[in-house]
Amino acid sequence: MSPPRAALLLALATLASGPGLPADSPPAPKPAAGETAELAAAQLPREERVPGGVALLTVGEASARAPVVSFGGRRVLVVRVAGKWLAVVGIPLSQEPGPAAARVEDGSADGATLGFEVAGKEYTVQRLTVPPRQVDLSPGDLRRVNREQPRIHADVGTYSEGTPPTLRLLAPVPGIRSSSYGSRRVFNNEARNPHSGMDIAADIGTPVRAAADGRVVDTGDFFFNGNTVIVDHGGGLVTMYCHLSAIGVVRGERVQAGDVIGKAGATGRVTGPHLHFGVALNADFVDPALFLPAPATPPAPPADNHGGG
Image (cartoon, rainbow, N blue to C red; front, side, top):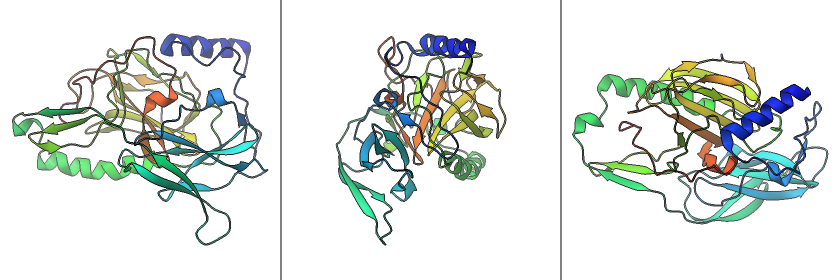
């Protein structure tokens, strides 16, 4: 990376996200072909063993080949840290508190297990009474959603070989972040799916930047998400950017951290402009705040930006 490019990315990270990694953190090394780079502890997400959180599990001493780890039948990201293999496990929001275990392939039929405990966490619940027409989908809209959901789930479940150079992400826009991840709305005593991402305030036309190096696996206009970009960063780490007013990349395009991939907007099922930012590990959306530097201002309460979806 040339000095001007490095300076640009540092400036973008500071502008968009506030304080970044500690000044003495080494730059993320680029692994050679077939190798896994060793990450510093400062390049890992913050660990929170709760539904929607992340568990960091030591697998064993690092060898030439990374172990294969899975959780809930889905491949888990494994990185090398301080001479050891570390499994970075995304815990789904639907995970019940209590004992859990990841599986390590060791040549036996069942494999070895990495046990850990999932603590409980209370997320915000909003109970609203509104006219049914404001929340119930028409038959045509429901058919469209049912067509789109398998495609989105497949995109989010992308697993490509290779380790991201860092697991600390750039904020895609510099706006105020809401604490909306995991919040659930109950309309007319009917619970809706919990919110699976972070809403970040952004005016229409605000540049939206890739949170890390990666490859665009899909773009499209979806009923709930509006104009959307989905980026694969390797090892099961995937980010999603929704409600864009414009998409600036195409499928298969390689992007670097800080590259503009679109513009913020209010497309899809929303009541106002903002960016919905999602982060997935092993095919489950987890709390994006665990991957981002602390915001310059405290997170705002969940905004009423999603029109019943």
